[in-house]
Image (cartoon, rainbow over all chains, first blue to last red; front, side, top):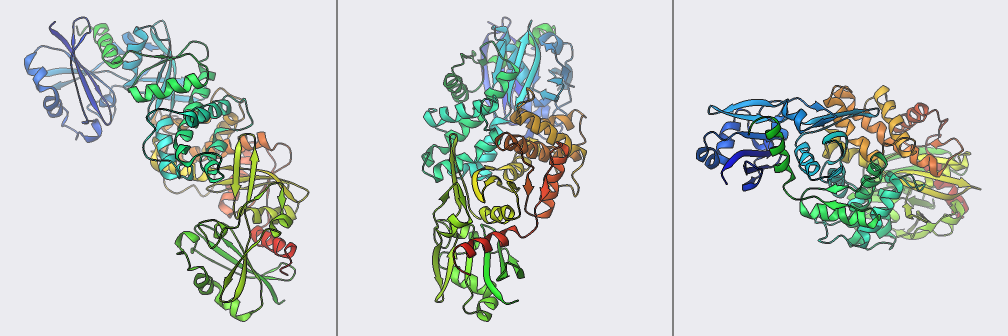
Length: 304
Length: 304
């Protein structure tokens, strides 16, 4: 099949590009660490050429679309957030175009969501969500430094919530007593200490016990200190507390349907283990959700 | 009045000593940054001489008592934790003696507390608690890196809980996006952004809203980003979220009586502002609670 689209997921610390056919199939794929944090202002066209120049040269009329922090005020050009409810079609109507060597590249905006308690934003994750929603997901979880939970109705994101679970875990592990016994690397397989943390974190977040998350964190130090937890397990216990709390909080916001989890394989596995510990059914989404979402936006935007 | 006791609060990062009269009055006081983290094994006698040698020489028979991390396994000698319920008398029965130049110094143990959800420990804070309890406090709050809430009945600590609020705040401010807009120094006076954070944090911890603490943290970034909060206020908002969550969680554990807050003046002021924002009556404890508590232990231990 011949290429029909270059789709790029260009975040703060990573660059991932797909060469897609006219029906959305991934023909080629490449990834690099050239996130926008390492790209100087004005260096976007040259960086794009360096990374996917081969695709550009071989297909001079091929359209290109990029999402993620590349469309932020610190990126190539700002593509202002689209407020929820929003689907691929809404995003497709708000594309921002930039030029690279006379070639047009469109930047997809992120989403914003306002509710009573405040406001939330995402940039890049919406393409993954559209990709998973396309395959039937209605409650979609993207674990990570800033985990996102999204609720989809009629192919549009109607609500979402960010939890800084991954970043909080690293900060606690590296800069507080809660991580004093924790090793730097996570366990290959989440075990019983992780599951115990998940159960306690979720119960606390669900308001089912008198313990709260803040009060549980010191336990990652006190339990090993008093011989109630193997010190080697304290990192897994802490990871479980936070992921459990995230799930507990998110399930109060978005109860009901079984979540679909998308992202890097070890993290998806860890979240599925957490859902299992809580007796909640959950599904691993098919990989390359971002490519599917970008294809969907490009198609709705008339790029194909 | 003549000196009757040298009382020392010797923690990880600070040393504070009091010269007390036979009725517990503070005759002299000194403080330094010579916490046990900076004292080499075996260097305790020399450090003590360097810091309070003048008192030791002037009063060759004066008893000396020290509490805090100096009695941990990383300190001078380990004084094993006393399980709750425990009061000054219980601690006084479990003193550990060390020698410095033929002179006896007693180390007071910390407290441990086990409940269904785990186990908790303190070392040093118990002297402050005994000091506040002596003046009538029944729910006692010691804000800090590791805030402690203690419940006192009949002059004994029957339950306590540690919240790593201060340390978590610093880790979030310095190492996550939640602190991206926050300055390094706290505001002199807690203002409306602090109060807003307190209300939201407490409501989340109290299970009164669908928001949880984890989900609120990203707001410290998203709200300023979307123009809903002055970026200069985001640090105060974050501080409020955490202190509010601590209070919300702790009040579920220890409802009822009005808390007495002891500690460094700016932090006590901040917590009193938080209690005020929540409509909870609270009291500032008299200063030098540690001196009063150490005096009490020394008296019950027959040192005087």
